[in-house]
Image (spheres, rainbow, N blue to C red):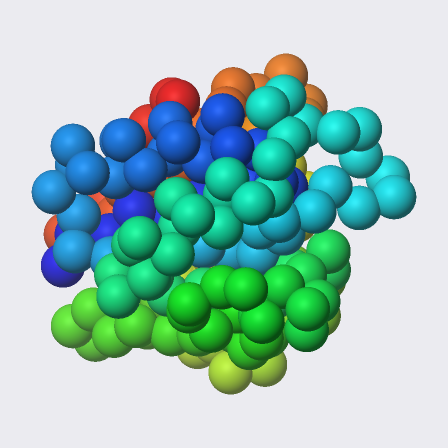
Length: 170
C-alpha cells in the first residue's frame, strides 16, 4: 500500500496544485487529507494563492482517490461543494496487523485516541508541525502543513509505504 498524506491546505490553490502534482508523480494509490481544506480559520492569515474555488476544482478531479477527515475549519457548506466525504472525525486503513488511524487532531489526537492499540499508527494534522514519535507502543505522526507550515517546517506532506513514512517537500 502506498498513500500520500497531507493536511491543512487552508484554501491555497497554489499549494493544492503542488500537492496534486506530487501526488500524480508519486504513484500513490490514495490521497489522505487530514482536514482544514478550504478555509484558513480565524487564527491563520490568508494562505499564499488563497482561492478555495480553485482548491475545489483540483481536489474534485481526484475525488475517487481521496480519503478525508473533518478539520476544525471544515464545515457542512464545504461538503456541499466537495465530491468526497469530509465530515468524519477519523478514518482508518489496515496495513497488515496494524491500523492507520487518520484524524485532524481537534477531536481525536495523538493524545486522545481510544481505539488505537499497540502497533497502530495515529496520523493527525492540526498543529502544522511535523512529528514522528512513539508513545506507549503507538506511532504518532503529523505531516505538517501543505500551505501554512509552523515551527520552522517546510510546505510538505508524507508518503506512507511498507510501514515507512517519507517526507515530500512541496
